[in-house]
Image (cartoon, rainbow, N blue to C red; front, side, top):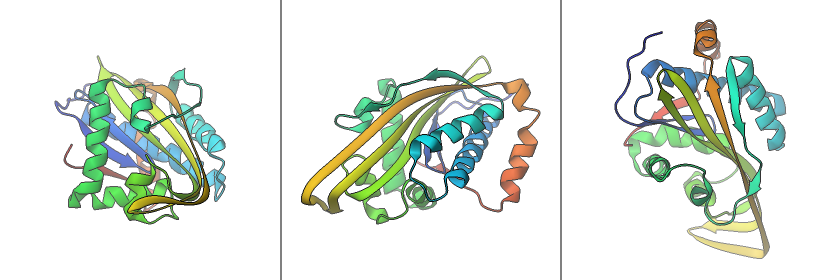
Length: 228
C-alpha cells in the first residue's frame, strides 16, 4: 500500500494512552494505530469492569492488539519507578522531549480541553481533574491508576509502536496546590516497556471493520493533541 507521509511530529490521546507520532508516519498508519489502540483499550476496560486489576487489563489489551494483526517485538519486565516517570522511560532524549511537550500542551492549551478530559477520565475517574498532571508524576490521594506513553515510528513502510505502561498506587496523600499527607504515605509506580509491530497487509483486510465497529459504538475515545 502506498501512503503519503507527514513531515512533523503529532500526538493524540486514545483512551488512557498518549500517542506521539514521529515525523514520517503516514496519515493512514496514524489512523490505524489510533483505531487499534482505542479498540484494544476499550476491550480491556469492558472486560475488567470496575476492577483495578491492571495487570489483567494490559494482558487483555495486548491480546486484542495481537488478534487484529499486530505482533510483539519486545516485552519488558515490570520495574518500580524511582524518581520521575519521564526519567525512567526507555526512549531517546528527543522522544522524551516530545512527550513532555505533548503533556504540557494537554494541560496548558485551551484547544486541548477535550483531549485532556479524555485522558484524565480514562486514567482515573475519581480525582479532581485539575490535579491529574501533578499526581501522575508526584502522587496524591488514595487510588490506583494506569496510563501509557507510546511513540510510533515508520521506516520503509514498517510501523512500530513502543509503549511504556505505567501503573501507580498511592495511599495516604492528598494534593491541593501543595502535596501534603495524613499520616504515612505509601506510593508505588511501576513501568514496563513493550514494542509492537503492525502486519500492514493483514491489517488492511480488517481496517474498515475495525473503523466501523468504533464508529457504530457512537462514542469516540480518541482526539488529537494540538500545539506539539
